[in-house]
Image 1 (cartoon, one colour):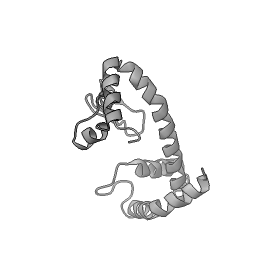
Image 2: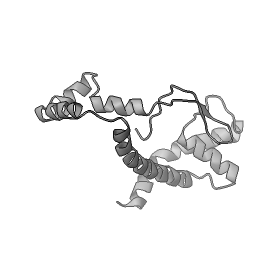
Image 3: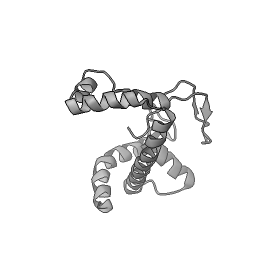
Image 4: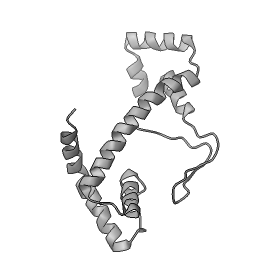
Length: 150
């Protein structure tokens, strides 16, 4: 994979967004109406707090790094999720038959989740309140569903 090419491509799409957010930050300071709470905003805020460059290119590099890191963690997380949910052999046999017969895709399009997807989503539910150690003390309440690298 050509990382330089990936960076050029993503920078092309993110530059207008990053420039708009930097402009809003200059106008309103750190708190502005309808300020988004997403990865780009968090990266820009962290760079500001650390006194680092807040250029579109630097922020795009960080987005690319997070993307690769989240892919890696998802690949590592998936097998452990399957082990923790203790799938029944009969479920796997049933799903394999459906895939061979070609009906598994239709079920997803009809709004019916395949059994494995339902278990993985269940395994990602927050069971007790969790507070991050960030400056804002962000808390995720119990029962919240987290989606990582979707």
